[in-house]
Length: 226
Image (tube, rainbow, N blue to C red; front, side):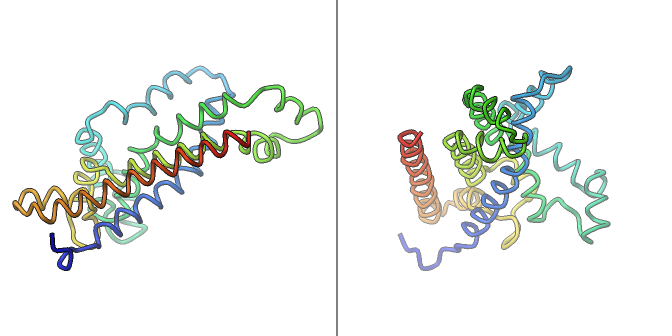
């Protein structure tokens, strides 16, 4: 297999998309998971079911409705076009938004498990010592749920790297903008260019395996420390 003619830009776009999506999801996921873990309210079950929808919906269904939302006639698309000067769909920013929605449960639910795993007595002890809820969150709760945080980060990152249906619906296949590696593999197979598809696929398999391997090694390290 000749790698000299391989276009590596789809890998860069996939990596960029996964990093941006994961970072944003960390900042969104922690407060949402905290709220769902420690608060009881009337529509909690409804929200939990809503947040879980990306886990069971076909990516094409989710991608279709995101496309309607972000297109020129969608309310989000209209707002974005006024602010940025171009539509949200079929641009990299649209891929980021769609990936956040699609990977949301992969970040939030490990975090919820992590919050629930922290012993209540050490949280109550922190309050007894005069620590605020914010101080307790950052100095007590989050340090004691590192494996859950790491799991959410890794799953969100890996899931975004390999996503196909949603990004194809929302971003299409624009070279240098929205053509990520999963789409590049699909197009190579369509063109019967199996050599290129093999190279893209092997790199993606190795990268995904190493990501999971690092996750398991770090989780064992944290478990020993805890």
